[in-house]
Image 1: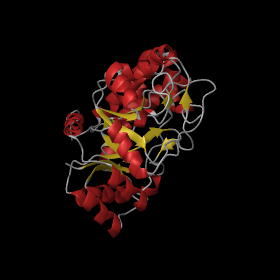
Image 2: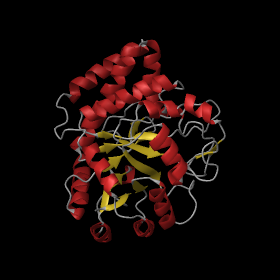
Image 3: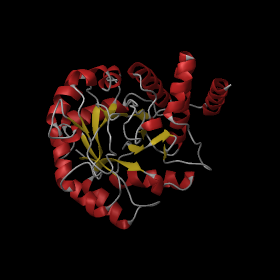
Image 4: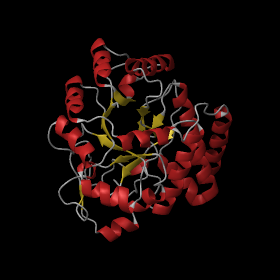
Length: 338
């Protein structure tokens, strides 16, 4: 079995040290960021080389291409997708148009990704927008309405899968109430469990059939006052796998974020030990990656089955009418602004 980890890399091409490390540890897959992106041909070479190092043509390669301020692929080579908030506004005026626009937008994103060898997009974000919360979510959220978020999240996930790319719902079981940025500190959500069930949890429960989810580095005091969801067996077993009935592939959020305590080896061990199928480490720092590799176990049989099930949800061919879908999307957005 491969290592239960997904790693980043440092630059636009692989170093000899990176190739040797990936060959030694055989991670499940990889994730790219803006530092890894220059031109379409360069990204294609990089995704090819990453898979070549571990000799698995189907190794998942992820990216965060949400739109708005979270877009690793940028002009002039790629389209700048709008933030999720726009589709919530369209939905408020015309629900059918909002759903159609969210699906078209994700399909066009997916077509761009698949062309580069990228097979998983960390989209849709189905956290709610809360007044007074930290703006790390902000316009990345579709809405403050759980029903609208679930509907548009479903449309976006379907659009990606139309294009042959797997979606990731995040940040389960809900990041919207956080008052600090998990990149910098650990948030604690004080809301009662009944409030969480009525709001934050609802989109994730509605989308529990989707293939992949990413955890939140957040303490939910009503569920587990000690550990964030990523390293909490209670949150993962009782809420994510239990109450929300999510049985897909569960990724940790980035282990290098400052929300988590302890060394990277312990973080990886604790995340997988708590119930995450795969530990995600993003920054490409070699020393940190070695620590994660030391702490992460081999992918479990259940994790392997979930990965295979996820990959079976999409076809390899993708779509061949991305330009037509983009034209239709542009028309919907133009009408909504009129």
